[in-house]
Amino acid sequence: MTNKSDKYAIKGTNLTVNRMGYGAMRLSGPGIWGPPKDELEAVAVLRTAVELGVNHIDTSDYYGPHVTNQIIQKALYPYPKDLVIVTKIGDKRTSSREWVHALSDREIVSAVHDNLRNLRLEALPIVNLRVSASAGPDMGTLRRALSVLIELKNKGLIHNIGVSNVTPDQYAVAAGFTSIVCVQNEYNLINRADEQLVQDLAGAGIAYVPFFPLGGFQPLQLDALSDEAQNLDATPMQVAIAWLLQRSPNILVIPGTSSVRHLRENILAAQIKLPADSMARLNKLSAAGGR
Image (cartoon, rainbow, N blue to C red; front, side, top):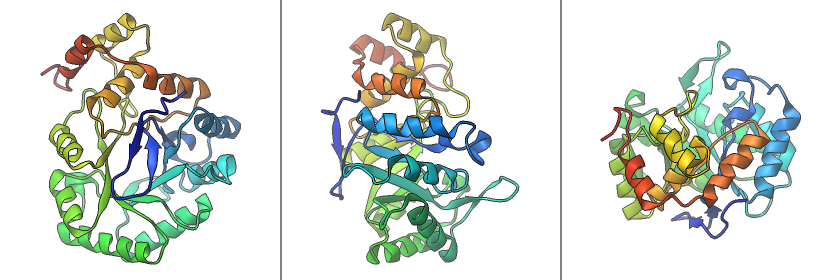
């Protein structure tokens, strides 16, 4: 069960979430394409997550595409009143299964309506604009995409705007253009490129949501992590989640899985309190092997 006392009020919104959330990307088929091998298990994962106290689900209509959101609707609609569904736009999947930018006015409007339809929502609580960091658009394109989201917000189709996969400069431009309520970037025990951004956002009270908190498609595998897990009678992935929750108070964690068993293990990580010496050792790890 999640630690329901560990709640986070998202600045600039009326939303409060438990810091342990769930990322729904893996509910679709292999390669994040098509239906899952076991839809009943996918439905069970979502229902179990909510039963265990998760009230923050991260998704996108380009997962599948459309499949993940349709499963969320099937499993959870009508939604619990406190459930916050956060989605992403800015990319799309082609028929050849490529991931490509989708930042034109038409594509943004279409993506928002696709999410609304497949999630069966009248308005989206938070929409993250995926920018793709250094490979993303120029600042003019970023501002234009945000202006379209602002128009949709003014129409009542979305309530809040966040950004995903951004550089600090891109975040600064976005935050100077409109109210940004959260940042979703890759960050985990060994990928620390965003250390300064996490710290800066914490100082500003802005939520930071790491994607690939467990390493993504290649899960974290470190002897030092395994050693800490053994000492704590936990799994390495539980320790990696616990580290994130203790790393900074503005971090909201969204580990994903298609297995009820793994979901339960992940959620139990919210109950783990890493001792100071474990945190110190884990803080020294990095993709380069420890700094």
